[in-house]
Amino acid sequence: MENESEYKPSVMVTNDDGIDAPGLRSLVRVLVSSNLFNVLVCAPDSEKSAVSHSISWQHPLSVKKVDISGVTAFAVSGTPADSTSIGLSKVLFPSVPDLVVSGINMGSNCGYHIVYSGTVAGAREAFFNGVPSVSLSYDWVGGKSKVDNFVLAAEACMPIITAILAEIKNNTYPQNCFLNIDVPTDVANCKGYRLTKQGKSIVKMGWRQVVSESQGGKMLSTMTMDSLASREACVEESTLSTQQEHLLFDREVRGSQVDDADDDYYFLQQGYITVTPLGDLSPPLMDDVEFFNGWLPGVHERVTSSA
Image 1 (tube, rainbow, N blue to C red):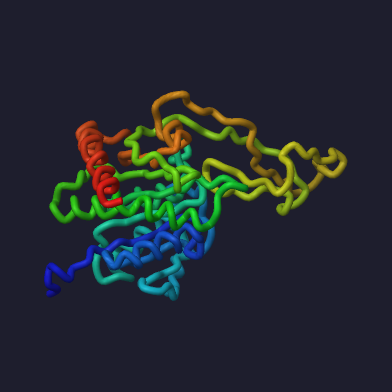
Image 2 (image 1 turned 30 degrees about the vertical axis):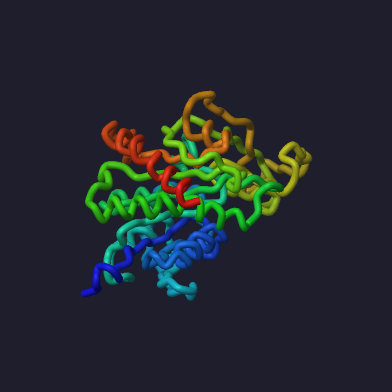
């Protein structure tokens, strides 16, 4: 048995952008370089954004070991929820990790988009299995954000991760919720942590008919869409034959609904790292909200004093 002074808590990382995504790789690099944790990775083998909490049922999962420096890592053919589930099952790792961190997602996950998010589902699956968990997302904005910002986002969230593990060790961490954390675009100048509640913000989506799969835009997250061409570009009606056997439709952004309230999306846009307690499929218990309301300022004070 290890001496307590040598013991390192285990952190399992998953995501929905795929095991090769820069957000996950940056998070893993920061966790490993701290030398504080035993880091495990179990993540989808490819992009699985916006799949929510779907699971594989009719087909077996394919799992492949992946070489990532400093960690034991597996790529899974299924969803984020699948990846978390099999990672906690002890068929891949010898023991259940102390904490699951899902992310860092390319794009924020606030408001109603939490429901669609595979990143949040990766953390929620751990919560369903009685394992403390956190979902992390970075508010990526095309033309402003850089890949290096994922490292800054991971470093900015390290105090929260270490503080959670300290509570877990002391058996004082709340059991009835998990945390969803969003990091602002300008992470280098963020205003600190802010405990928030889930709002009702949502990007309004519609459908347009297209003539090829390559005509559509690429989804970056459940909050943003990067278009390959102007979404206003029209398609000649003559090319959209209604006689085709298979019609193709692509999602397009048609506006947004943003609450002007004190919620997760509002404070994220104000430059805060938002920390939102979530329940299973309902709001978290008030006792848990009160715990984090008193706990988060202490995390911030420790960061300030060590800076």
